[in-house]
Structure formats: C-alpha cells, structure tokens
Length: 138
Image (cartoon, rainbow, N blue to C red; front, side, top):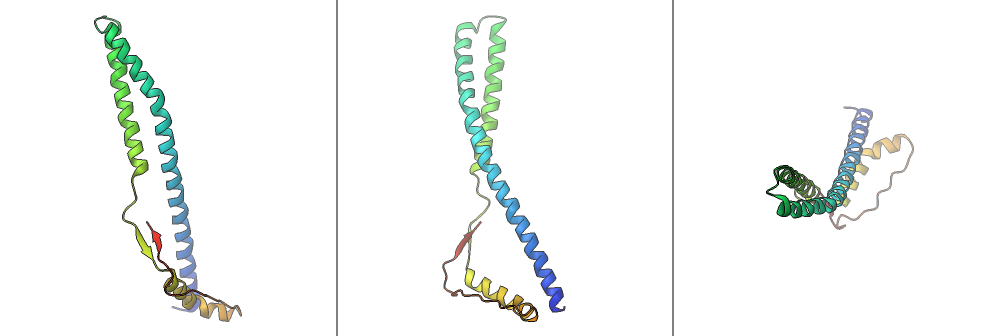
C-alpha cells in the first residue's frame, strides 16, 4: 500500500471517527433531554394521581365515576412506569470506562503522517510526553 493510499485510508478512518464522536455527542444530549422531559412530566402526573385517589375515595361506589377514576389511576401508573424507564435510560452508562494514554497515540499519528508531511514540505511537530495522564474514554 502506497503512502498516499495509507493517508487516504487514515483520513477516511478519521472522518468516520469524527462522525461517531458527533453521533455519541448527540446521544448524550438526547439522554439529558429525556431526563428533563421525564422529570417535568412527572410533576403534573403526581397531581393527576393525587386527584384521582381523592375522587376514588369519595366516589368509588358511584357507577359512573368509579370506573373512570380507576381507569385514570391505571393510566397514570402506566405513564409513571414509562417515565421511570426514561429516567433510568437517561442515567444508564454506556459501558465500562476505559483510559487512553495520549502520548503514544500522538507519536503514532506523527509517524503515520510524518512522511506525507515531508513530501508536502510541511513540518509536523508533536510535543507530548509518554507519561501524560490517561484520558478517560467511555
């Protein structure tokens, strides 16, 4: 494989990695939005449940109102379950956290792109110690 082919392959890999990072960022934002929506929807739902319980206590024996109040309570419980699942989803972590040493990665990039930079009469400088602290990835 020629240097240009390697560079094109690496550029494509970089493009795909950037797309994946963007996608993961959007998913993280979606998780935050889900948590906010679930929390905000929980507040009025608690009010609906409380009023339905009051109505049931007062009108449970009423042939017309009783069944409708029980249906409201059942649907409120279903909605509460859905909101709890959304909250749990928003809190869920996407796997075990790993760490990456940036120094060796940067040096590998320098080696891979060094020849290409020389051909283009560019200078590629990477100043990174191999003992930099690990960067957490998840």
